[in-house]
Length: 505
Image: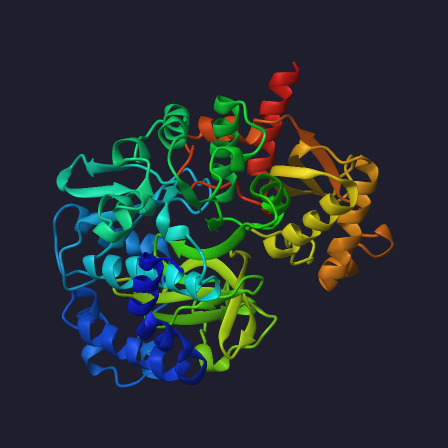
């Protein structure tokens, strides 16, 4: 073990002990987070409106404070961005993370407090490396550099004291020295807005560095790595960075990309998934090949909406004590940035309750349930992975939407897939995808029974670069922008098919 690794591991010993206590004291830890948040929030305008000072327990909190979505939060955000204070959290908010979830035309601006940066986002970064080092004590990751893929940050035109951008850009701009000393490229490149100019500059700036780890959204890191190989003419990344050992990823499921990364990074590489969103740092893998651990002491209080509550006017949430494995829950958070019972739109499935381990299953608005099939992104990613493995295919990106039953169409799901490597047998790919979905999802299987309601999925291969053109046309290149995997409407699918039709004309 190197000297720096020894120092870091020793320094983080207490944190590792605290994380290990999650399994024994989850409810107590979360109760302390709740007490602290409500006490701090009582002096804000929001806290006075919902009488935080009178709340005595978590049950009363759920009864007295509503679950909200962005349109309610937006009213406060607009006032905060004009310079008002103490509306949601008792400190001046000067950073707002720009988030659209996937590719919605209207951006959301999520408040980011100083406290959230320090005790949530940066704390998560330290814990992430501490847990990795415990599993890999001989790692040399701290002896080299980390390439981080981020977005841009700019002053708000109506109030220059306010800065808005991707959460990755906010984190990069204000990184503590211990992290900044390890990160490349320099900020002037890392935070460029023009993604097409940024990629080659990032590649050029990192070629001669001792890169030990990569961090970012898998789909965008792939574009960066392809640029690196293109510029060098090399066939292997290890010819460029011989000590590359770790990929830290999040934002989209890694399942469709794993095969490509294993080919690029080799059999000795390690992979660590994190769940760090605009609204907070929620989870990370503490052990390889296991689901993510819910981080309980980051200034966040968690609640969960069962699927049957998602569309109710007054949904009833549960706490961690009432969770069950194998069910889809929408995540509701109260945070040290002033989000109060905020429904962020992500859905989780817990695979362990002691400790609390989960995987991201999708979005509350991005699934297909047009015919009662309740198809979630988690099902789709796994089924595609199986189809790719069995047909030799590799995928860059995909989206799927329903084709509705009418006089000319049979009801089915239409999958728009950009293959990096097309399947050996396209017909077999569709059949394997279909059978895998049936095995993973009993509702889908029932609706596909005897082809009575749903027909076999239709696969439409897209030329490479199609999703890139679509995102570019929407001004959504790079950063945290993601292709929506599933949709109950045909909005995204029809926009992409229009691009395909124009190119074929």
